[in-house]
Amino acid sequence: MNSLRQAVAGFPRARILVIGDIIVDHFIWGSVSRISPEAPVPVVNVTRENLLLGGAANVLHNLYAMGAQATLCGTVG
Image (tube, rainbow, N blue to C red; front, side, top):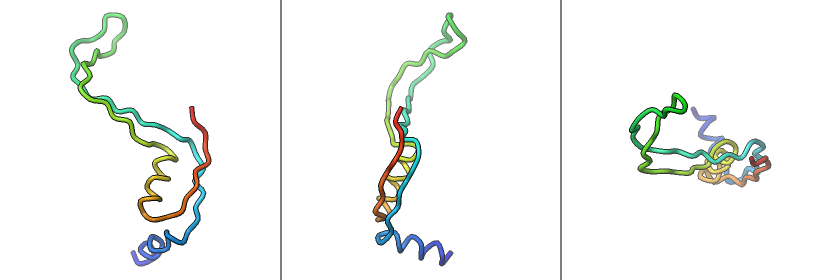
């Protein structure tokens, strides 16, 4: 556990390159009113939507939160 604490304590001095897919996670909340007659999928009455960073963008966000200097290189789409 001490090695983990030492690694996190060194984050403000670290320069990190994050390479990966840049993703936006789209969360939808609601209730199912019925099953669609065209396909066997639920029809949802949406009550709330939320967009959050995903993939490498989420890793970058978490590194920033720990004080690291990080750069992101990735693809979108």
